[in-house]
Image 1 (cartoon, helix red, strand yellow):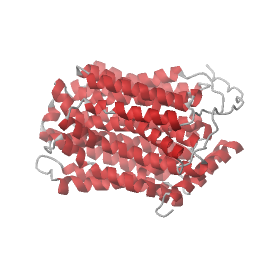
Image 2 (cartoon, one colour):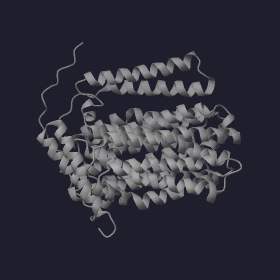
Image 3 (cartoon, one colour):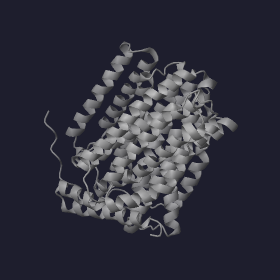
Image 4 (cartoon, one colour):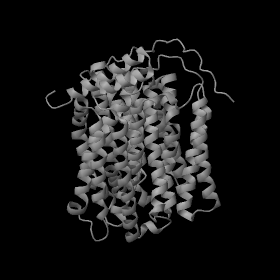
Length: 519
């Protein structure tokens, strides 16, 4: 069947609220930024807080390693599958409205997680959590882009990136305290008061916004295909790790790959695709997302297993395992704005090459942790510090690059794409890598098996991080964010898009520069 002929470009419509009015110096601006950070922070927090709780969940429910994988992957699967739809819904029906809907959904699912009587119900509740997260995550960043004044947008994005990274790192610390001193159930219950505060701030300070172009019908077929493809692939690889490559696991894995291939073909021929191929015509956007896949895939697997290895092989308690990663939190908080300012001055290419390489060195330094090498100062802290340094180089430049290379009206969609890539990478890494390292069934509870499996996963992930740096070296253009934005506009051949790219990149450049000390 021939591809559908593109319809004429719909006429623009005014946004429901004038865009880019807020400033960081105003109370409304600070309130709006806090609302977006709290909402997205819950999603990032929950993505890591379950890592610390995993061992106790396994003990309480007598669950094998495959069940623990699904406690993480049920959440990640729903989030990765639906986050593109969440971005499109926000652009279409109102970013604040969809954001608030996602927050209510996420908090309600968190209550179900906290009350789950069995591991299977917990996994189902985690899937529901992921659906809520898919609604609110892309909206948080696109609300910042749409709501703040041009001179403050880049700085607001930098603060959002840094605080979001901090929430990810705080997860093991907070989770460890709750698991050790209260209950693992409160690792999920803590979301309820956070959501309440975020909703009050959002209702008070966040203006409504939506795309200023009319939208076509929702790509429900694309949504179904990506969910089925990722779901089948995840189930197949997880089952293979638990029971071996039998007929069912092999069929699901191959079927998942086939469905994902069909998804790509369908998107290329759909008039209003969930994942528009036009975004990937820009080399910088493509390279940044390829780097996101390799980097966040490796980080997803390592973060999951590092905290578990500290407890099983290193003999740490949940709180001590969480505290072990605290230096990463501090480095992200202190250095992310400076990395944003540096990338604004010299361009994001060099920081995005150095960042994953430094993070790879840090991860490699943690490979010695086992029953005999678990001193925090000697065996754990050096790797954590180097890892945190690498992440600090990476987070803000990556976010700014993705946003600068996306057309103005595709900001929410671009955010969703990048989040989907990151979540899918972590989902697949957690499903595939541990079984390859021999971590199956109940064997993960044996310290020597856990330590050996962690080393194998570290070796693979170091390679993935270095590969990410190589991808950036060959795909990202040299020059500042302004240069990248203008080049992306040139690629579209649309003067309006060129202007939008240039202004968007300039906002990020100027604001990131202002974030330097004394700026």
